[in-house]
Image (cartoon, rainbow, N blue to C red; front, side):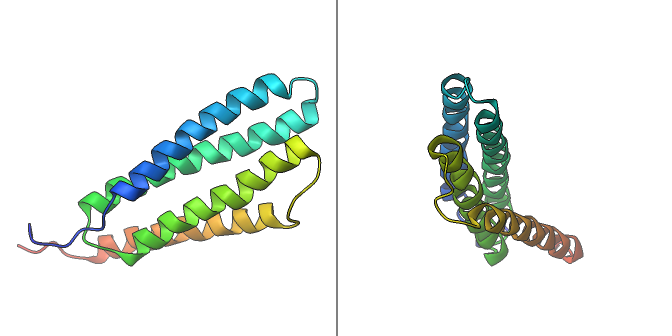
Amino acid sequence: MGDEKKTNGKPWLFLGGLNGALAVGLGAYGWHDLAGDEAMRSIFMLAVNYHMWHALALVGVAVLAERAPASRLLTLAGSLFTLGIVLFSGSLYLFSTLGAMPVNGAAPVGGAVWISAWAILSWFGYKRMRTRPQP
């Protein structure tokens, strides 16, 4: 049992912490610098909200990776959470500050990527429930 290979959680912890810090910093920027345009401020803060939630999801992947046997599902979920942050939150940040969507469809694709990441994390949990602990 102690010899089980684990997934390295350190990269996910790094990405979770980095994205959490970015979300806080961007939230402060958006709140103060976009105060004159409520519509754009609202879009920006939506991006911050989702950014922070998915930074926390990356921290969760890091914790699971350090505790569970090695799993490609965790690696895939972490990768998709990160990609979703870039696509969804990134496109909303750019739209709300530049006034134009840099890549049409990036936000909905980012949302679909996040749904996939959560589904994969759920599948990982389901598989763990079905696995009997070794004596």
